[in-house]
Image (cartoon, rainbow, N blue to C red; front, top):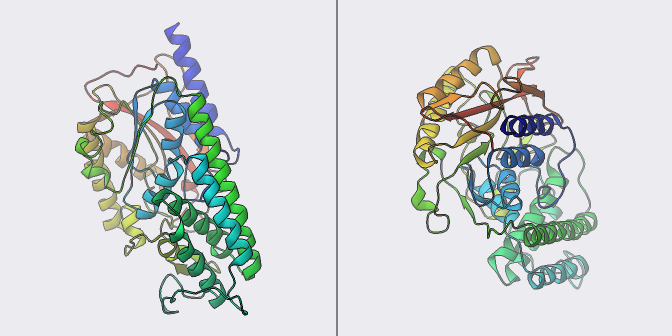
Amino acid sequence: MRDTTARLAAEALVEAMQSTAPTQGLTHTFYRYPARFSPAFARAAITAFSEPGEVILDPFMGCGTSLVEALVAGRHAIGSDINTLAHFLAQVKTTPLAPQACAEIARWAERIGTHLRLTGPQRSAIPPLPPSEDPSQRGIPRSLRQLIAAIRAESEHLSTPEQRRLARCALLRTGQWALDCTTTFPSVPLFRQRFVEIVTELLQGLSDLRVLLEGTSHGVHSQTVCLNVPAANLDPILWEARIKQPPTLIVTSPPYPSVHVLYHRWQLNSRKELSTPYWITDQLDGHGEAYYAMGSRTPTGLNHYFNTIEASFARLSQVIAPDALVVQLLAFSHIETQLPRYLAAMEQAGFVECAHLGEDEAPGRVWRRVPLRRWYATYQGNTSSSHEVLLLHRRRERRLSTR
């Protein structure tokens, strides 16, 4: 029976990993965060290797996919990321709002759609704009800059911080639709219309999440902690007031070594890089691509990346349960040299790779071709980074058991 359970869990995880279905449902579509992984994969890993009431940790949480799936599965969730934008998104996506709060946001958005005007006798008050050379503004038409600033200011009239974050998230997603990797800009009326539509979509996602949590709680009042802390600095003191027991499962996807990903910028006309997301959400930025990727695309940067991975997982080995499992999805710009270095860093940090998904069944490493990702390898024509590998590790002193 135990072997059968292990085999079925392994098969479900591999099937979820290989799925090319688009991300959808709940709060998963709130923002197109770069290199996010599939909710189906996170769900399968959490179901296979943890029980309701246990704690899931994602130390490189991105926009919080694994946290949302942990909540729905009746687990507690801890997530952290060095990117303030990721922290903002994870908070919004894992915070259900009461129906009354959602209704207030819907009425507010309707007023934005019908009454907010930039010109004419009914013109709304427009807050001062940053200078046009500001990195968050450069190249954006003035009319759209004014509209974004006005909606951003109007969001301050909502009653609670949670509502204001949701409104900013809707503006963020609308801005991404209008500006990121586009060659033409929408008109002001079209932007305003799309914003109202997106508010409605986000409210529906939150409502679906709230209903699902109420109906499938597994008898667990799931807690979530979102942190803006490097993985190497994680400490139980940051979550033990709300979550008492240590994590039993890590489900994560760290940045990929030497793979170019703009976690922190939009690209205007696929060239100019904008820090607009941080302006819209009122988050701190100031870092370059190498900071968020944990190393530049140079030999020195690559060394920094692997040193950071080793330090991060060495710290994680101290805060997780003794029998905890680490499930990771990774890609490499040069598999032949970087995969062995990654495995060596994990070993130095105190982890050993599990050769199989189940006890006696299933293949060793599983690879998949990454669908529809807007990132590319360091070197032209190098397609290694278009393939992800599933890695399973456990603490060196304990044996893996599939639940």
